[in-house]
Length: 333
Ligand SMILES: [Zn+2]
Image 1 (cartoon, rainbow, N blue to C red):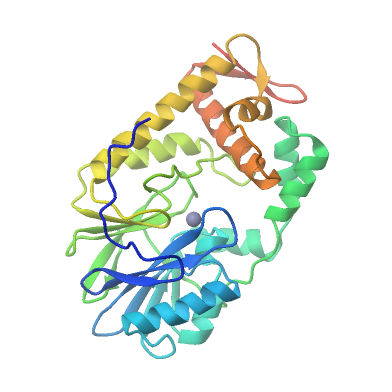
Image 2: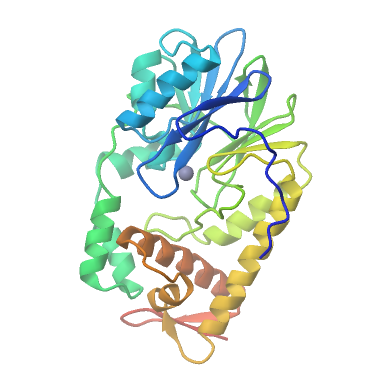
């Protein structure tokens, strides 16, 4: 699919560096220890202090980038932070929240439903259900065990996390931003709409050059792709002319990107349906055909979760059925 939505030409700094994207809003590209390259966090200036959006992955290079990036923006992390909003539970977003809270003594906020979920997942990690899901859908057991164990290790969270509700307005610099529930990539992901600045902090919901992983994981609520597409649709026409995502370039054409993402998933659904037309196949077998190349075990687990979300969507739409068995297989209908 040809990209038609262009980057905004802002925030062209390198990984580890900070840049102002709108007056009073800074972006730091924090390094992450995986192929994605960086996660973007945002600092919003206000009379009562800075609001930080997302914390990044917690390891020394990211802490260094936080310190130098905040300094460049004019924010003293130990004195000037009013609050820290975390968009979702993934380690590249919530990872450094505990450290940031210790450094800044500022409150950390997440979507209310995300808090007990993140505490359970990262506080008492259990690879068992994840291994079970991967094997049930066709991944060889040894691979599944290794992949799941690598992805379900513990993660220290802030002692206290305060709840946010969808629709709630939170202070953001000298204005405010509305919390929008944006499920699909994570069940309780939030994005923030700053109507005054006409800016959408889009987390991993809407990115350019990258399609967010919409996957079925052992703990995922039913039908993640349907909820993702519905959420995307509800954001059409949102009053925002700058989108500040969690990864990849900053861009302006929100509706254009929504259209591309909807089209991407429609194409992917078609491709998968074609794959299971001749004979039933497991989600793992389909994922190996769709996501080619030398993938790490973790990437293969991501590919399987993503394939499963799409096959589930085909079943939901009546375009496929699932057949019980070891493994479970899917067949076009
Ligand atoms: Zn992310």
